[in-house]
Length: 273
Ligand code: SAH
Image 1 (spheres, protein in one colour):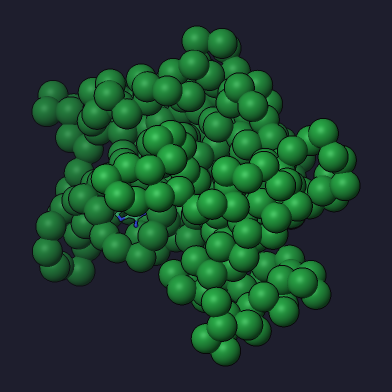
Image 2 (cartoon, protein in one colour):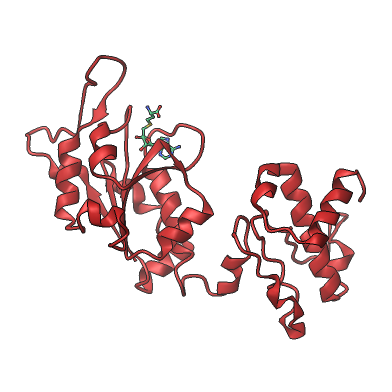
């Protein structure tokens, strides 16, 4: 996958994308990330990228011309073709007013050949970019950042780790928090062990522990040590349900719940253990 970032602060990306899986994916050639400096697409002596808002009001607004020019230089498929799904490319404007970025959207983006991420700054970006240039607006959460750069890095990291081959153990990205479909079908496979059988199915992940089994008087749950895969699986599912109910009850509405899950939930809600 190719990812193009359009920004007035290209140096911003020197840190965030140079570690872990994103770095490895770049080195392996799975992801090619290119940062484009918006100022290179200005035509005045001061390399102006912003201007005052029409209609008055606070702050400055990113001008449309450099952004349109930059995108033209990227030689993408025409917008109509992209919107009709006829191109495996997507132009994304990072915006607090965008659709909320989720794991589902990350998975949609991960199958594309190319994503272009436009980072806003100041009061935002001239609306013609959202109306006529970008295919979609994405927000990484209900809060306001000072720029789209961190948001673009978030999108790239979430997408990159879903690229086939980017994460050493691919099963691990299929059973994490928010992952839509549970991978519990493999529950029957005895030698599979319990760890690939607790897929989130839209829930939050189950808790993880590692050595030492006892640390400053805090012990790892006994069930994880006794090696009974069936019990471990049940315990993990129960803890995932518990945590989802406590921290993100909204996710339960769309989660894939089987009869056993529903029973566990009813028990937790009744105050049972
Ligand atoms: N006036 C805007 C905020 C502008 S913040 C408003 O009230 O909605 C400046 C830039 O930061 C935006 O153009 C956008 O690119 C980025 N940004 C801010 N919050 C964001 C968020 N939650 N998700 C993605 N990008 C965000």
